[in-house]
Image (cartoon, rainbow, N blue to C red; front, top):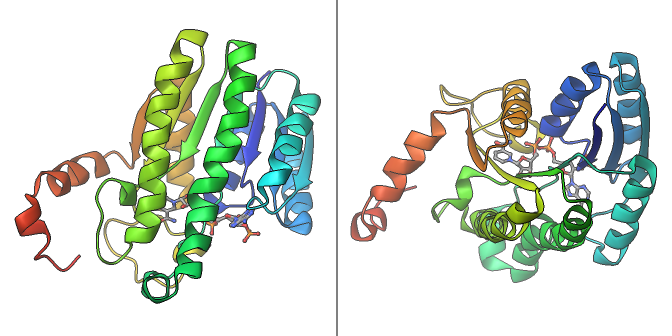
Length: 245
Ligand SMILES: NC(=O)c1ccc[n+]([C@@H]2O[C@H](COP(=O)([O-])OP(=O)(O)OC[C@H]3O[C@@H](n4cnc5c(N)ncnc54)[C@H](OP(=O)(O)O)[C@@H]3O)[C@@H](O)[C@H]2O)c1
């Protein structure tokens, strides 16, 4: 039976992933910032087959709480087999350009809180000598675009950090998975018009579970984003800067 820690557990992508794991009868520790939502999710996951489950409510920008988060999770789960990090905010690029405190908010939630949690978790997994750390980054971190480069900076920094962490932890038997979803229909993107490239969070959840099981390093979800991003990354900068993206 797997022991699973989910941070940002109330996010749509995390909830759907948790449901898939619950069906296989695992033990879970959930972390999010809304107690009521965590309680509802806990009941739902128990009904779906989770064997033993607990939660902790914390605002994840409070870095001083992070030691307690990982300690409490490890105390409940014992060996942490799989960790998923999935909290985040999209932010408003136009506001963030005008008001740097807004940009800091986006960077704190999407990047700094991740790096802080990962630095603590890395030590735990290094000592365990096993486990998978799966982290939701984004295709937005692959190349800066005028429409979302603050969010993209946060995600890009997380992706680079994960490359280094993977390199560090490989020899200790720990797998680090970078998850790069494209456009996903969740509360975060509720204000967007949806088109052909959009998918639901359940499809991303299936991709996450599969990538964890296969011990992948990086996964684009759905798969076709790997090819879209390859083309986007190949566009020469003198051309790219003239494009309206
Ligand atoms: N949707 C997309 O198109 C897309 C694409 C690529 C990557 N992603 C990434 O996927 C992950 C999951 O997002 P989602 O699409 O599933 O969106 P979502 O349903 O809106 O989930 C975002 C979650 O982050 C939590 N959160 C935000 N700030 C927090 C804080 N300070 N402390 C604790 N929790 C906080 C929210 O908590 P509350 O419920 O309390 O607000 C919510 O549960 C995020 O990392 C996002 O950047 C999403």
